[in-house]
Amino acid sequence: MNLKPNRSIPASTVIPVLVYPDVRAAVAWLDAAFGFVEQVRIGEGHRAQLAFGDGAVIVGDTHGERRPPRPGEVTHSVTVRVADVRAHCARARAHGARIVMEPTDFEYGERQYTAEDPTGHRWTFSETLRDIAPEDWGGQTVPGG
Image (cartoon, rainbow, N blue to C red; front, side):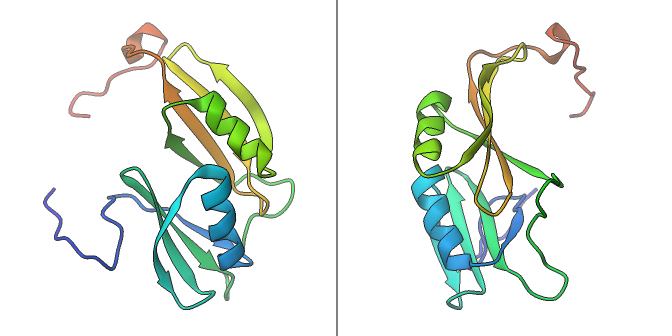
């Protein structure tokens, strides 16, 4: 896939848009707790584009049918790869993230933890421990994938 560059949108091919009641507060928290970096601001409280490595998310305001998660519901989770899950988890906890799953090593070669931000969005952070073929833990490589 050959995509044209555009400085007005993140370069990532998949860009989650997460809704928050206060965009500016969300941007500040995501920076402090998770290490995201604001790249583009659209209006003071409308939207913001944030980067993390070669990934990106857009933080959007509540408007019309756009709403943040409701308490007690999990409708999505965003997975972000990091170099050190334990250090990242400590940083997130220090900034008030609710840790849903402590750092755990999995048979597929990843160490992961899951956190919930103050608005209820779920985030899983993943550190690669080793390269393991999906077939070694019960997965399946799909031809052409």
